[in-house]
Length: 437
Image (spheres, rainbow, N blue to C red):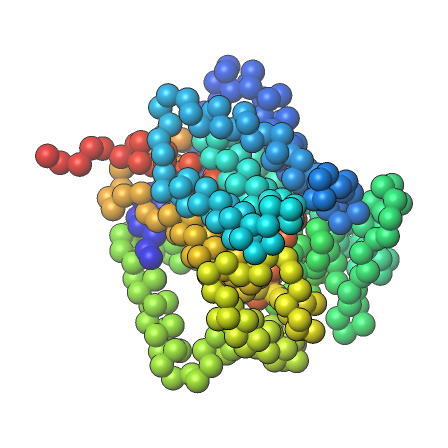
């Protein structure tokens, strides 16, 4: 896989990035965008564990409610004249359908509450990203709201470290009733989680936002301040996956800015990555185990995750097509924790589910064109920068999910980012000149 020159900004590294042009219609659309962003991102504000209701056996969280409300309007927008079908659209639809079909084949239609909730929130999150975040102004508004919420979440995380309590979850439990999540610690210090369900999810979220702000910020001072904010969030979570994602996102940004004139820089980058992986798989007896064990701060945790991989792969091999849905696997380790999206989804819905999920990500990231267009207007610069930013986010999602399981709002956020990236790719294709006759 390669990311072409079209994904990178054409301006020299020191050049300022112009803000998107704002028209009168943009100003009039402000309240509508604010409402959409509030619904899309409300899952970042309201903890999913404590603030939920049961509907037909499935849990309805704030994040699920937001994308469910917007799903029908999203379909209406997508079927408007002028929008085009993308490969990622088909991949996202097939991912959701396979998950439901595989679960139905295992437990029947009476046991579809949880599989339907997981698959539909993924599909709805994707549709919302595809439909509502197509124009530069809408993405700019999205980034502003996202950064405001990130600032609030990091502030909560700092307060959690100072008070040694998960303040947001305690408050949500008191407000909605029920019991709050039990805090987790490392080396005697609480690991911050803010409003998300686990410190690892919070830390990775901050790392993903960092990859976006590095491309979105309009000057060096703003970029440094926002990146530092995200780093603080990663540190308070005490998550090795978060720190790794933060470092990789920052390195990808630096690589792109240091080599702006090298048109083949991303082909070279992925060539080197591919070569490194080939060497790893040839020289190391247990390459997956080596990767997993070296992505953790705690060696004991890395060893435990290697055991999870061995047991999960053996279980998947017994039923590779449809998985086991949400049924118990009669394994004391696998029935308690599996810290990997790819293993969890393969165990639940079979290997085709993770192949389709990977396809959705790759189809969105795949370069839109091989040659740059040369436009220097604000909209074109916005497209290039955020296209690269969301490409990095999706690649970090795929990489981090080797040692992280995303659920509740982070699962929705992943689908949302795939949809946004697919829309950016559609815009780049629409801008591209027709191929020569």
